[in-house]
Image (cartoon, rainbow, N blue to C red):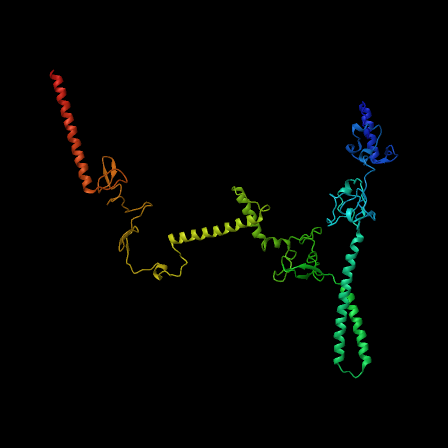
Length: 460
């Protein structure tokens, strides 16, 4: 099964091998046995049961899956901290000149340098340290608690227990003193015997209250930065009804026992003012959840537009950018609103329109003809175009297109056909007429000269 030796096998041999494996998996044939006599589970996959080719396995085995390279030299032990081996009485040759120990030299000494070293005084010789050399295995190198002695923490436990006991004794003494003062102030007729009985009863009550202190389960949490603490509950109140018991109908809201969540409202038909639980999905659409969703969407859109912002990597930067975005958006909204109101007016102002305008009534008398046109009382207003009307530029007194001559438009005031030109007035008109007359005279003179030339040519 797990051999690495491969030999030629016919189709019949492969079929028999497959049938044997199926029989072993079904429990009809005995399981395969390795070299140690242990049965091999037939359900182990072939890639795990087959040994690599370089191991030269000749029979089925799972030894290659076990820790077959274990080193017996590895150990899980740790250094014996602070252990000493020998205490010398005088300085020895080759020892540390500072403290007198033989296990290190002067350069490696960790003691404070003495004013007069042990080499010269021969006193206060430090003991020799215990030096160990051993190799740790994989777990030993990575064990954080390797070499830790739990007994070293016993003194800490004893100190806290002694403190608690002293505190309880102090409280008990204070309560007894208060009871004695109270009994001394009372003048009962029963005498001193009754007072002694009362003291015994009160002392028993104090002991009982001391025992009840250990039954209190509280959780101390830090509430402010100053170091004060407060007590909070770490479990839900047992008097509260569990969410899955609010509605026992099988078709009600689904409850997931693994996550202890119920997303939908178990009692959707009840009065919302009387319900204390409306489903876990209610928290997703209330409080700061929606604000966080808007922040997340803003970060996505900003990143798509090329801004280097990431909500998880730099949450403070994303929060600041979103805050500035909301401020700029509100400013732009107000600016657009002011622009629209300035252009079209505000219908919601306090200035009320006249009653005749609101009701469509006025004192004007208007007559209409049979076609519905105004015949008397009000002149029909001419429709205005989208272009600016009666606007004169460059000192003109008429608009462009008010003059037409020789298939060209122009200005009536100066009779110029160049648009956006500067108006020259009557002088411009006279100059244009003079230029036209001069041009006609020149053309007539040119024609006369051409006629004379042709006449001379004809004569000659």
